[in-house]
Length: 430
Image (cartoon, rainbow, N blue to C red):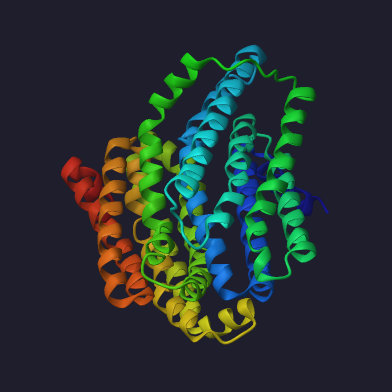
């Protein structure tokens, strides 16, 4: 009996650790997003068809790209400020007010750009109204208080709220989306339910946690925008490199091809989250070890690296051989082109794992400038090669370009690290 209790107590202490709780709840949020996305795919394809499904995803890709502008690095910088000011509600109230005001202002600018593009320059032809109805997602992103709860180390509520909003979205699809003509409402529903839940969270922050919302201080907002500029540009470059393929493909292919490609891309983007989650998980311990004992840091990172490579290889191999089954389950039909795209892209999760060592070293060494340069070099390569190969080979060419980008970014990071500090490279790779 006592032996069992002794075993349970350390596990209980482990679960009560704030950093581990943050990671677990972040993983829950990501997992719920992935699960709802997978469940919604066959429902949407059956309701609106493959071609409209592709256009809905294309509009969503544009919105997600603009959400990088709305976030503007606050999702990385704001949790630190909140954590520092936890005990000072007055100062915390000013920070929270300014961050929300800044993000809402950026969302309004992004929405204005979309409306000008659609109604002023007749851009986004073929999915204009879908995109206009998707604008609500910008304000859903602006009001999402995930960064606040991260800083407060109270992730349970926001993770539950996120799951609830996604379930409401799923219910909305089942109840209201029944024909291709209703495709414009898909992203609108996601934004509507997300914004509604976020506003309830803001009420909780104000009434229960005692955080007041003040009039925006534009000088403080401007300073924070300047401070976050490098983070924003790095995030933008990384996002374009990883998620910009569908937008590039839209210049060369019809809606049906977009739908079949976006189906395969969604599966791969889910699997590609694995190395990103690993970096988030090991970063705190890696940072401590790097400062206290670099030899132990390299041993730790190598051990993680080789295990992750092995798991990545299993994930990629499984995705390749199960591609026909995955597409069949998600689309409830045999889409041979989607299977081909998925099989080509299946190597991406493994290739993304190659760069875990380099990225971790850059992060623990606080090499933001180096990470910024690597991100934009990767972006330039991806856009250039994708445009060339997509124009020549269509969606297959885009798949090849995306896979090759993972190899090139690994080499870029390795060369930049070697030129900046050879000791870091030799310490890890020797």
